[in-house]
Image (cartoon, rainbow, N blue to C red; front, side, top):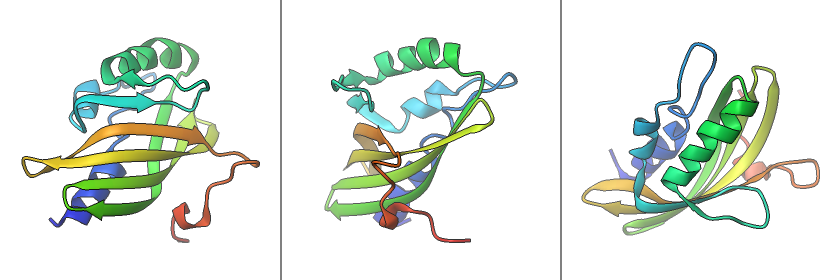
Length: 143
């Protein structure tokens, strides 16, 4: 698989283990595999609060799971810029909360390739809204 295909696969499947419902639990071990040790995540809340991966997972387990009975997130569109063993990706995701509430966000990823494998070094995101819409080039292709 070439580098771009590996990156598309990594980001395209990144959120699949981070889903839950009344009948399922998130697979945090699989989720962790996407990240380089020491990776940083920074959510949409402001002021910005960069966190390590374990504090992020802990927050998802407490705050998010207490407020959401079910959660799914799926990557729908992405742009990749790559040079050698580094890449920057912007990706649009569709979130489904409690089975009915749909929203979108844009994630920015800093990726590095080490030992033949692409990993996430940093991940930050912001919510899409009417005032901050999803850019056209991150919209998924029309079906």
